Amino acid sequence: MPTNDSRTLHLSIDSLNMRIVGVILATLLAQQASAQLADVDWWKTTTFYQVYPRSFKDSNANGIGDLEGITLKLDHFVDIGIGGVWLSPVFKSPMKDFGYDVSDFREIDPIFGTMADFEELAQGCKDRGLKLVLDFVPNHSSDEHVWFNKSIAREDPYTDYYTWRDPKGINETSGEPIPPNNWLSVFGGSAWEYNEEREQFYLHQFVAGQPDLNYRNPLVVTEMEDILRFWMDKGADGFRLDAIPHLMEDQTFPDEPPSNDPEFTPDQWGSLSHIYTADLPELYPIIYGFRKVVDEKQEELGRQMVMMVEAYTSLENTMKYYGEGDVKGAHFPFNFEFITNVNNETTASELKEIIDRWQNALPSGAWSNWVIGNHDRTRVASRFGRDFSIAAITMGQLLPGTAITYNGEEINMEDTWISWADTVDPQGCQAGPEFYEKFSRDPVRTPYQWDDSVYAGFTIPDSEKPWLPVNGNYEELNLAAQKQEENSPYAIYKKLTAMRKDMNAVKSGQLGTSTVGENIFVFTRYLQSADEKSVLVVVNLAENEVNADLTGVPTLRSGAMITYHVGVNSSYTAGQELSPSSVNVPARGSLVFLYTNAASTTVLASLLLVFSVILSLLH
Ligand code: GLC
Image (cartoon, rainbow, N blue to C red):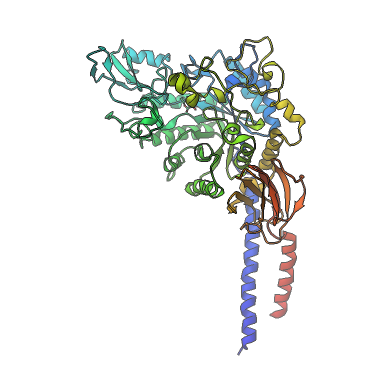
């Protein structure tokens, strides 16, 4: 009979055995995870950089950026460590919405260059290991597209390529035809335009020069799928899909109810609740169909493609774009949380909640992503201020998933004030002089600030005036100047993209989020494998410096020291080791530290050896 003492000894040996098995399993799993990393798809670990072609680099002195300009600057992408370039539309267009109104989906607009220029750009990307992603605008064409002209003339098979409706009646006083219902354009005013020749109204959810294609017509779907194939054959590595929630409308065309949002006047889009013109369930299968086309081409060409969806919608609807069951959708729909939900009043616990909510909403196996800004929304530096914008970019780079950067974010470019007289964006123009500042997207689209020469190096001094004014701050805020500064936004950005490339913790580490006090948000990207560094990001949402005790951060091993790596306005120097018990976090800033999460595997191996010797002695 074993004595009580020996039973206790056996029990603790058993639990010790269990723990050892646990440690071995954890180590094996961690090793397996690193082995799989080599196969991780390129679009997962990289940063996509959105180029707004009109404003990036003008090569022919007409004041408008072009493809050759982008080719001239390809080394900039390599320098800042991004792996994918996404071009806003460069297709043939009368430019009523600056390229988002396409009159030939298979041609390059002469403003941007030629097909040969496109091919040269694609080759230049390939030579540098960069991927090239195009903007695909399926919701509408230009009113100058040949399909639209044939549709006006009721020439088959184009008659129903667009959404046409009879007038509701004739206005007795003006004698004008009355639109079929109260639907509004995103840019303001009726979403219907009367066509004298066809004697019917056509639907346009954006400007009148952007007639909505009719996705209830299978021929339209086939046409658009062929266009995807065409560009993949030409060298595109994937697409950003534009304005997707607007793809389909209710077939019975009922009036939409008011939103009762006092912020909007009756002719502004926000004044209605868009239950019949946005997020219709029928649109998701169209996106799944596009994915099928992309996957088939990927198979045929032996090149991994990517498909990203632009959809400003609820979290629930956003997640549907990933697919349904076994049917694949987009590789990811854009995550706009930093644009739509984070603002200057956001508290640390709200920020944690916003990030956790997105991560928890992801369907199983879905890949995350973080968009900080784009050509439609106030620049991040103007939204959050010069310091917190870098904190936001830091989060976007180091949270799990793909990072997306809008050109200029890497140097913290700001919005440019544009007078009513200089306003060209249709959304601004349509709003009129009283409201244009609230709606115009011109301020976020001004020329890229390369250096302190005339026109900020965007074009040559005796060029025509740039299509939008250069920001007056360009002499102080430009790429060339930031290359000389040690801790400039550019230098920080480069360190962050390098972390994405070099560190397994950023590629595949677990995410842990927490708050410390009222103002500090912390997240870790940690690895169980003890031989590799984990990452700790500390963000201060207060207007003043905060001294934070981070020892309670759940994923930080007790006793671990942390090493400062990169940050904004930091009092620490790179490589400096400190205790997490007292960390000074600058006002509205972020600090990134590295740490080791557990004892190293060499130590574990020695411990295992000692335990197994003890065990064999006991048996
Ligand atoms: C998307 C684009 C925007 C464009 C609109 C219509 O939202 O990002 O710039 O005006 O679609 O195509």
